[in-house]
Image 1 (cartoon, protein in one colour):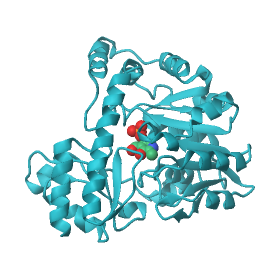
Image 2: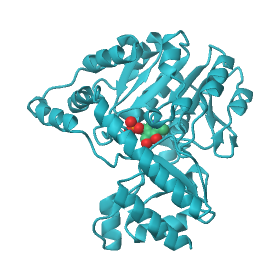
Image 3: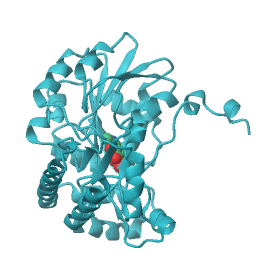
Length: 365
Ligand SMILES: Cc1ncc(COP(=O)(O)O)c(C=O)c1O
């Protein structure tokens, strides 16, 4: 097949998304058992019992199509977040929200401003839609908001801001972000991907939904059930934005993109505050352990507002990741993110964190 003739020229310009290696894949390749995965920012605690009960309960309904616009979940989210149901869209993960949004807003030659080191999916969908990603500089490991402002042109449709940012784990300070938002023209959509916002320190949470509810309706906020609720395998996330934009997204999205399982499980965990608090407490403690041990090794790392930590190893990240892999621990080299000496490690269970830190120390000493 001549894929260059058949393929969408936009799709042909994209690069493949490289996910964290699968546990079974590594076990097979190295003849290991009990491999630990700390590469995809999955929850170390798994899903809650409420999620598991809801999953079992929905088994009788598996033959039925879901509600195509997930009304019940949107209604509950609207109540919880203080916005309107028609300002919310659900999709199969935050990934699905990003794709549906991209399809709804980007067309040929539109510019989308995207920081140089961030989650790669924004660039992919912009390219698929034949828009032009405009990359902005970083200030060390931090997204440079001033460079974003400088990169805006009359062709700018949207700005994609991952906050907290993947893969750095850094977040903007609340006041700086709010000041930045005030400087962006209302004609431009500011997409804030908050997949990790639950893990952010209070001074790094801009309360974006309150800003939106207060009238900043050029915001589009993306959230995920994959991280704090431990539902990455279920695939459910949501977006909050102006009702006209949500209505447009609902016109073009695949009709049944959120499964009946995903909607019921998400509904069951929404008010699971004890579970969330417990996870946050554990992650906080484990991050302190990382900071202490990395300080002892005198390594550079980013204080994390997420459930992962970015470490600058000062060496070839791909090579060190492979060495760690051979010891049965999957982590993420950040070479593909444009950080060839950095690794990204998901905060795991206490014993797994100790195991990683000991293995890592041994390898770099
Ligand atoms: C910043 C960011 N946005 C979106 C996603 C996608 O999340 P989901 O699992 O909800 O599709 C991820 C996944 O890791 C992410 O890191």
